[in-house]
Length: 300
Ligand SMILES: Nc1nc2c(c(=O)[nH]1)N[C@@H](CN(C=O)c1ccc(C(=O)N[C@@H](CCC(=O)O)C(=O)O)cc1)CN2
Image (cartoon, rainbow, N blue to C red; front, side):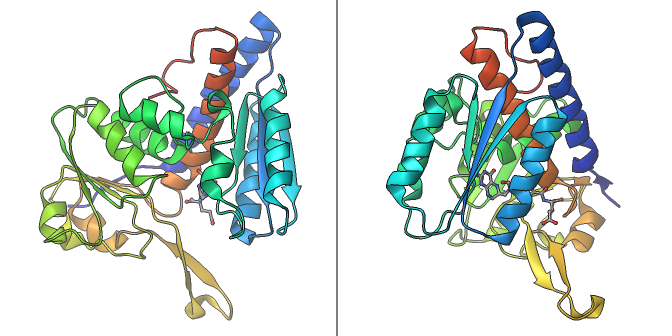
């Protein structure tokens, strides 16, 4: 068997198109422009790339984009003051602090200082609680993107066995909540799980989000299962030339694709959906802030 490849890049382009339509309608019907502010502290090269992409795509869908680039040694007080001003700015509907933050900054404190209604990352403790109790919330972008692709592929997810490998706050835990919300039977597995290969082998849906390159091999995958690979691991690739690197996921792609029914590649799978869902969340936040109906098909 050779798995169907779920093209996250094409899917993300479709989602951005839907967001652009929603933005244009907001402008025409209500003279509203959604605004997204991204805050980057320090010079992490990967974060620089993601923040640049976010700004560019925000403008492409017709939204207002604001960027705050701060020195790596910015104090917590200064960062909190910027977030406070963005919380109070009526032209800004979404606020995102790019992670990871430099070590001297308390990530939880910073995230929880964002107005939960503008928390388009869905990381604020209020949004975590709302999602966990099945209430309307802002949903973290990467898991939301995975859910959209799974719904598109399967139609209904009801009754399917899903295993999420990884228990991070930004992917594993919210992913599990979303799958539960769609009536999957959900297992969260992690590094201490006993008989991990057997646990994964039971799953109709495997979401790998452990941050360990190619950790899930094909012989852990049930034939026909859907595999969503959240991992983005950069490995040295001397075979491509000196100093060159290549990206791999948390799943061993070739062996898994040989048994799975469907699989997301790395790159070009879950990654592009993260930014598309950030834009979708900003549109949703703007609609909610103005008491307007939420865009269809762009929320959980
Ligand atoms: N505040 C946040 N910080 C971080 C998040 C997040 O959702 N919110 N997620 C990641 C980084 N990230 C977005 O911020 C992100 C990661 C990867 C991609 C992506 O499109 N990846 C490409 C490959 C890109 C490459 O060549 O490196 C792909 O998978 O095809 C987009 C966004 C951590 N921080």
